[in-house]
Amino acid sequence: MLKIDRTLNGSAVFYEMVIMEYILLALFTLAAVIFIINSHYRWTYFFAIAQFVLFFSLMFSITGQWQRGLNFAAVLFVVLMLFHRLKIHFYKQPLLVSDFFLVFDWRNWETLLHYRSAIFAIAGLIGLLVYAVMGWSSAEVISGEWQLLASAVLFFTIFSICHYSKNKSAIKQWLDSLPDDGRDVFLNLPMSCRGVFFKPPVFEGDANYFLQQKQHVPDYPLSAENEKPDIVVWLQESTLNRHSFVFESADIPPITMYENQADTKFNSHLRVHTLGGATWKSEFAFLSGLPSTDFGTMANAVFYSVVPHLQYSFIQNLKAQGYYCVALSPFTKGNYNAKPAYDHLGFDLMLQPQELGYPAPLSKNLWTIGSDEMSQYVQKILQKEGIPALEKVNQPLFVYVLTMREHGPYHDVGNIFNLQNQGFTQKGTGELNDYIQRIVKLNEVMEEFNQYMKNRHKPYVLAYFGDHQISINGAQPAYQFDYPNPNYITQLVVRSNLQNDFKQQQDFLDLAQAGGLLLEIAGLQADEFMQANIAMRKLSGGKLQDCQDVRLLAGYRNYLYQQLKVAK
Image (tube, rainbow, N blue to C red; front, side):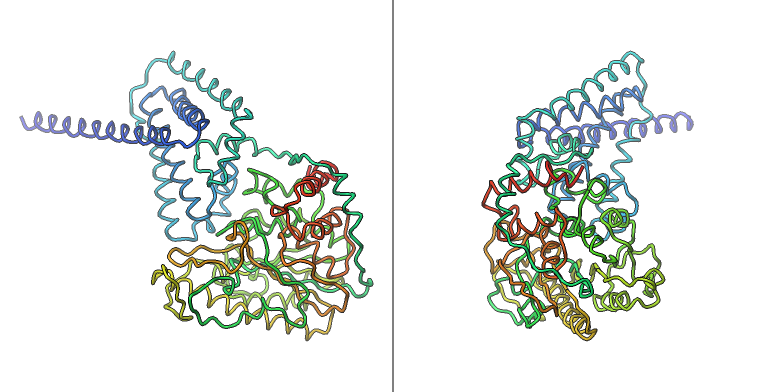
């Protein structure tokens, strides 16, 4: 009798588990249906339904279990939607297929998981993904004819997605959606698939018109061979001059590195192409001389997919002028494919602080290394102290260094600088104070480093720029400047002891034009690509995407990509 009771109890538990599984299946399926219904664009309905059918038929054709196929499709829909929202939250950009290059490269995982809240979110997504694959694995397998039918549906669905992703109406609707954060992930994914395979950008325009205008740009004087300056460029992580913000009241000390001084050659606002992260986009723009936005859906993966195809770059131009080019990064050489990308761009050497004496394993990203410490290592490079690769180098040096201490996360340190603004929360104010105190410290470092460069009594050019702005919830003041997309503005300053006739001609600059600016200030010969880069800066007032002369911009792009073939 006891045995019978146990059997009955076991059956009851089993049926309860089955019911729970069906309830979960129904809930996930309902969520997927809601995602489809709430699509914002006409083409999203088609692509979302097609992707759901694709996921279902893929799993069903492999396993012959319809519940497993439905579970896989529904849960995967939820995972993709949450992943999309997660990326918008941290990077202010939609999820595209190219992002999976970064996600599947294990060398990036430490960076992707730097924010504690992201760790829990990603762990949850991984758990859901495992359930999507393994859920209903014990379900009954139905006859093989249904699996064959599912396979046929699978191939038909793939064909349909590939075919309609080329539809001009679909492409236009997708491109129009991107300024709205590309909020329909199930439209973004199939439409961005085509960008996985590199194709040079095609820009309609009149290259001859640009070349005619270029003839009116005068040449600049060149330095003598024995007077070529050492050039040091600092990418200042997450840095914006806090005096660019409007506060009701604040006691922020002067940030002198952004003020015009006796040795300031250039000082302007800077258009960057990323917000809140994705530093590699700013790196790419500066080092290559091309904005990542030119490459459409591959913009997020330029260090993987675009750099190997570049035929020109700012760094290659420096190399042609006899420079030995060194990159110093607090991140590992594999992070975001940095070392291979730097090699393609033309660098001779990439170093990590650990190779210069910093006490940490080479495999660690140095999230908290001070900018003062980075300064000491740059000085070591310039002095060629204890660096075998530099011992026999007698060429002028180009040193490119990335800071990290200014990067988030930020902490509530109280209202050190007495910031007052209506709408600020206490926590947001505290975090903004933390950020500002890091910028104040960076200012001290840069002024001391500039003095070091002066004390060497050698020709030098020193430049520094912010790679992107940050976003602090509860403390986002208005700006002192008035530009379109103001949250994509930072600043660039160039200082030098060179005595030349360079005169600043504009107060705005696109980051992709910074390399040409440095060539001109240093008096270095530009190749045909950088000549065009310099001419465009002078003709457009330092603007690319902000350029109001549509014909000039179209002609410039057409010349670069269709005539000069800077990428192929």
